[in-house]
Image (cartoon, rainbow, N blue to C red):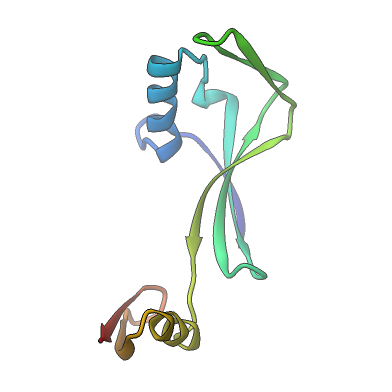
Amino acid sequence: MEKSVRFNPEYPSAFTGICKVLNSQVQTNFDVNDFDHFAFYNPNEQRIEMHLTAKSNLQVTIGCTNDVIHIEKGETIHTENSCKFTPDRLEGIGNCGGMRLERVITDSKAWFSLAYYKK
């Protein structure tokens, strides 16, 4: 499952919000239009990873420190993980916390779940 999606200003991402904060609070000059969003499933980590890929060579200035970050075309910034858990892994997580997995409720495709634990 690999898909690269370009930012759409009508649908703000977490990165868009982070950029606004960094640009205003730390005086950076990030522009979300300089990046493509790339998400893929990492089977070894059992998670979906979200990355930003620089569309060109960039220089991001940090105004409050006068530092410059050089980002090369194709370089990625790992921004987010969406972890996926098997029922066995959910049970193990509960056991580590001293809880028993009572029930797992899923949607019809088992893409999303709600785990109910009991101490």
